[in-house]
Length: 204
Image (cartoon, rainbow, N blue to C red; front, top):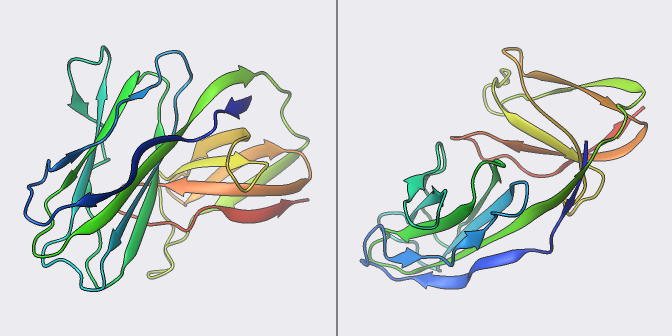
């Protein structure tokens, strides 16, 4: 299944999370996904030259009707501490969620800068599976152990706009895909992990 994504929608354009404003000090614009097929949300938090004493927090909220709101599972947590630290994460938004917003704040003593943007999957096109059976293994760089239940999606471009395959790693950290030969970009997401996305790979 191939997909087409929209140009990025900006929810928070480098807004300031004011120190001491509370964990709900900033509420983003609402992202309307009601006519699409889900998407990918990109979040980034930048500490100042002096980092906050308590880190900023963020949580993604979803709604079926733009009225009743619920926290998206595995989408909330604290950003990194430290002077001038930049933290980022990508969160896949499933097709069943129609409206999305991001609530951020909770940092103390020092302000931070927050950005949220998303690309919506606007169309899906059925494609034949690739000719090559290709496996991808997710390994923890610290423990060198495999990581299970990682959401994985593969694109043909570094911007992540053309998704050609998706899956989840098994207990051995392995996911199997059926792809054509060429360069692909692998994207990873799991709560509690900060992966470097994308990972460029050659299928042969």
